[in-house]
Length: 351
Image 1 (cartoon, one colour):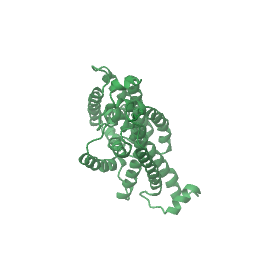
Image 2 (image 1 turned 90 degrees about the horizontal axis):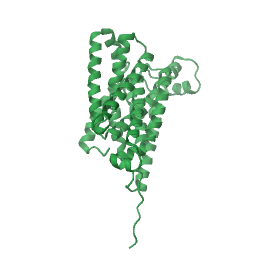
Image 3 (image 1 turned 30 degrees about the vertical axis):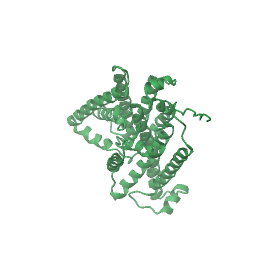
Image 4 (image 1 turned 60 degrees about the horizontal axis):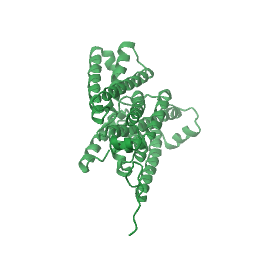
């Protein structure tokens, strides 16, 4: 009998995806792209104020300066653009955290990003009297970056280096410490508590184009680093020894990964406040058609994150008219039961 030749796959040692798998992945990405277009249109057309669809179209292509034009162009369009960027960032960051820590319950908070951002925002309010969203963004980003670096440095000094376990334990320790310090500050100063609550709820409301301008370059650089790390993540999923034998520097790969996570999650948290659950559930949703291959999983996670965040924002505007529910609350309300159902239906997939 003739011998059957099998070419090694991208991660080394595994067969390449079959045509049906590739077709399923392409169809999944196409469906997410179409869903994102629909979500963007819904984000622009639907809000607490009901605007006829013809006036929405007119405001986009031929504005005349009416009140509805101002609502569409000055409020909803910048809010929707920021929602796309933040959703992509959180989806990618969640997939990266789960990949680098090999923890199916991992999200950006695991590396102390949210806790670091929160603590620095509170310090900015308490020590420097920061009251504007512009100030919150920069303090939050610096806090997220510092917390991530501290977690990585502590993890690398543990026996065996920056292993998934050491990073997770270091992140938990730093997170609890920063949360305690944040609570201490807001209990001492009532003004800090009032301002912090506005930022900490997680929202796209009140963010104009200036906020998007401040964070877009961090998200773009983080996205490039994330997508570039996909082959190394595939190798790491087979074990550190296998990854090293395939020519990947585990230390450099993790360093790039931490930098990408910090840029993505830090910028998203700085712009909108902590939005929990999105980075946790999105990678599990898209694994149903991408499988564990990070070359497909990462872009799918970014698209799915944007779709989920925009739809949650639209739902929050509709269900609480004439007010609105903040997107962080809606994502948690949607995400918690979905994730419970996911766990009950099947085991968490390979990371």
